Length: 451
Image: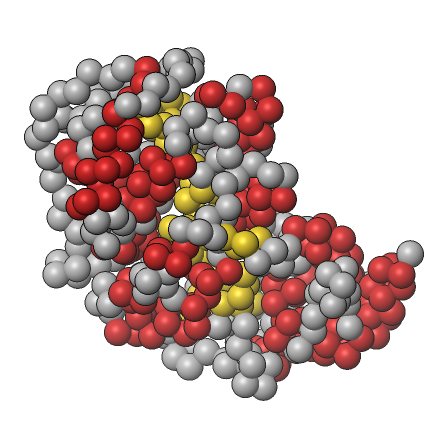
């Protein structure tokens, strides 16, 4: 398979078929238009966003990506030869960041290999009105002819979109795609109910940051972590209770029964709340972490201190690693290491104006392992390919990321989070504020789920 995912003969046949087709007129409101060097790429900013583009990781000179803009003959866009891609702001090809330049060059390379196409990139906010999922849902209902050829979605949104019938199933195409060296944790990153709907692009997972000068050997178990006196900062008021869910799963707890209904088990839950209680009593989980409802606020609080630990998303550390901190995987319960993972995937909207063959061609081109490995490293995400680990030059960081990805589990299905996790979050706050004994909290959670 070539870098575009098809053989030379297949590519010739595909081009002949595509050139004989007529595509409907596509024209959306354009807010910002810019021109790539030698490659006409339009970019529409649908919503102004305040979040900055993530910075690159600290790399050695040998591993930094050197990218230059290719000089190509200009191509005049027409209504029938435009392929549209929807991206979040952190993948903006018109930004001056290394990520933007890398994506810009990949777009230019596609144009060079397939001069019959012009690519139009549109930016969408990650969440909210006018965001990726909201736009996909509304456009699918009201104007399917305006759907993109390819869209990047975070995994939770892929789940929702797939269950709502908005995406093309990729089961027939994935056997060839899975010949790539995907890491084990992304096996489920593009799947919903056993079917493939997305191609892994970038990964993320919960991890722990610490100060090596103060804690050269960070605790390896939750029991050790909760018994020491340094503060462990995490969003205790997180409505999704992701940290607590992780501890519960490490304790052997299930969140789904055999008939796919949400469930909480007594013994793992009791062990989870006992760890929280021990950390509250020792000072490891101070009551002031109950004010943090997001990982961003917890990460900010950690960086304002010179001691302690922070449970964060790995990408928060990797986008701009603090000089006084290092990254490691989450502690274990006994020898069982688990961490919750998520990520970004390429998806093909159902009923998009271009043919499925064309969409697959574009998706495979932007799933090339070399390109994705560079993108993940520059954007501060976990690699999705085994070969992506080899790009990490720092041996200690490489080992940490290897440990994180090898223990990562994809986030639970949305309905489970919506039903169970708010109950866990409420009890977590009560335990940390010493408003309830942990045994009472166990009964409180189990009783609430029986109603």
